[in-house]
Amino acid sequence: MPRRVRLGPRLDCTLMHAFTCARCGNAAPRLAAPPAPGEAGVKLLDQVCATCWHDWLQHQTALINHYGLTLRDRQAQRFLTEQRETYFFEAHQTEQD
Image (cartoon, rainbow, N blue to C red; front, side):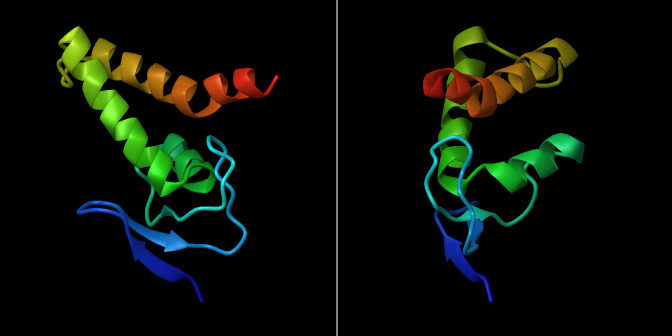
């Protein structure tokens, strides 16, 4: 049976036995629910640990503040989605190559 772990006020996670994070490569607690809607959320749930998700939230906040993004703006949403994909999947693959 999975064990639930709290990593912070909004990071309620489930520790699964064979989960390895795609970003950090560590065996770590996974998120309890998809952090985004649709296919992207499922991909993140299946491949990203709660610690890396927490790090992304901090990085995302820095991007929002640095570029003065308005989250209601579709272009800003697309930018953040592209940055999230790069942060979790593309940048890590480049480091391994």
